[in-house]
Structures are given as structure tokens and as C-alpha cells.
Length: 306
Image 1 (cartoon, helix red, strand yellow):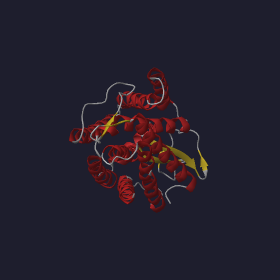
Image 2 (cartoon, helix red, strand yellow):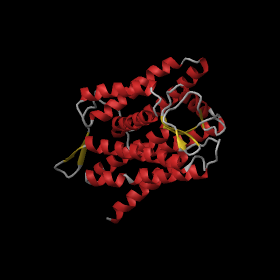
Image 3 (cartoon, rainbow, N blue to C red):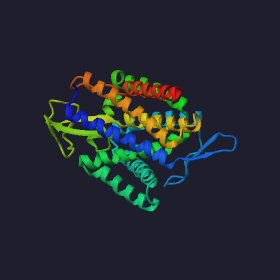
Image 4 (cartoon, one colour):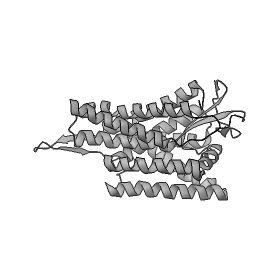
């Protein structure tokens, strides 16, 4: 067992909360129209920070792939030259915008912008674990609201396979993913969930002397990377679009059916944490992708039987 049962349960609970919130935000902002010929048209209003990028299909797929490659390369360069202030600026803007997008689905855009700014500042300067993880929950849900309507389910499936392979290489072969996780955690710019603990006691604050995954350190930091949260949520977003637009499933039913995916992914993450050993790093995306595909398969089977 990589972490204690309590820490594992907290990580999985935060993961599930993010998935449910993100899927609900997507369905809440979804505008469904049945056309005279019986086909279904799905539209989304502009976000609280403006219009979405005008792209779809392969363009969205390539955009996400290029963004991952450029972002990873830039971060590794900044880690090498120790210029984290540049990454902090980018990170601050990304948190601010994504949190604003999520909150803007439910409240006035101006209020959402102000709250997003406050949470983005807290993300950079606070080491309170509750605030750090709450901001992450909002951030990934906002990313899903922004990008999920832009990419079809088949492209997201391909992306999950590619990211799973990349994750194995980055963790087991090149190990640059491990380097990034450690450096980002130390500098309070880690994208993902973090739970510091010592023995059976959960720490309230994340301190700079805490080291990711090291049992011999005074306090161990359990993490779940941002990609392990964002990619299954984007996949779920593409699935709910598919269910409503292509299969004609009512929006509220599609929301409930789509929840099968995060439940399946959570089960596979639990399996990973159960099999993993202490003081070792493991790629989570192969487990995440497997859970997402099985969840989608169950959804399709349910709709075939109905």
C-alpha cells in the first residue's frame, strides 16, 4: 500500500468530487435543442472570460497535444535554470482563468472573476492544504467546461492512450515527471492534489521541507497529478456530449450515466494505490485510461439494453 488508507480515501474522494462537479458544470451550461428533423443540437454559452477557441475535432486534439509538449518542455527548462517566477506567472493566470470559468457557470461573471483572483493568489502563497486542494477542484472543473465541448469522444479516447504511454515513459524511463512533481511541490506550483501526512496524522499545511513520496522525510506528501484528474474529466465531458447529441439521451439522464466513468476510474486508482509500494513513483494514466474506457463501455452497454 503506497499510502495509509485514510490518505488514499481522501485523495480518491477529492478526485471524485472534482469529476462530479466538472461533469455537472458541463451539463448545467449545456443548451440542448431538438431540431424539426429530430436531430439534436448542443450549444454552450460563452465562458465568464470570453469565447471558447474556435476549433473542433482534430484541431482540438492537436492543440492539446502541442500544449502538453510545449508546457512540459518550458517547465523542464525553467527547472533547469531555476527561474520559477516565470512559471508562477503563467500558473497564476491559468488558475485564475480556469476557476473563473467554473464559477461563472453558476454565478455572475464579475463576481466569479474576483473570487477566481483571490483563489489564484491563495494557490501561490498559501500552504493550507484545504485551500490548495479546493482550488485544484475548481481549476480542473473549469478546464473541463472550457475544453470538453471542443473535442469529440473518439479523439479523447486516442488522447488517453497517447497520454498513458507518455506517462509510463516520463515516470519509468526519462523520470522527468518525477523531477517536475518534486520541484513544483517545493515551489508551491504543483498542479494536482497534495496530502502531507506523518504516520496516521494528516498535516494541515504543506511545508517546503516536505518531500514528495519520501517515507524517510519528516512528513510524506501524497500526490495525484493534475493530468490524472483533468484527462478523465475531459473524456467524461466528451462522453456526455456524445450521449446527448448523437445518442439522444436526455441531459439529466446523460449526466447520471456519465458518472459511471469517474467511479470506474476511481476503482482503478484504488487498485494502483493498493498495489503500489512506498518510496516509488508510478504512472497513473494507464490505470486512469483503462478505467475510463471500461466506464464508457458500461455506458454504451446500458444504452443498448434500454
